[in-house]
Length: 169
Image (cartoon, rainbow, N blue to C red; front, side, top):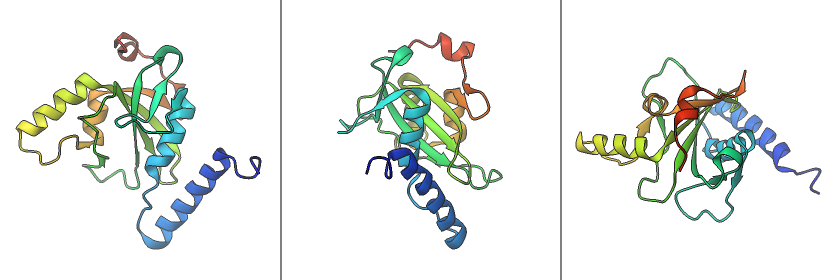
């Protein structure tokens, strides 16, 4: 049974079904979060937590050992539309970093960005002071500006000076 229904095969089928559903109905299924959790954990060598303790989805290994990571995902269907937003961040919960997976219109991974808690909380505090209604709400563009690119479909893991110089908790 494991061979027929392993998680990778299920994710391939989930992507296909979500893509077909969107093309047939013009609406997207709320599946990008689960795909993002699976892909980010696999691509960035993270261990998903099964009983979500609240606030984070995975724990890092190797150079991110012990780092608690919240995972977000966003499928970009129309790049000309600005103001695309990521799911609300769990500001009050315990976590160290957030990783955002950008997917294409077939729910395939394109890029992963990573931002640390300090940058997110500082931005969230400024947004709250400017009258934003939801704490933790953020646009994809703002997240990219706060974080740094850590993976691309063409290069795999990206090791840049910005990412290397940021201290992990």
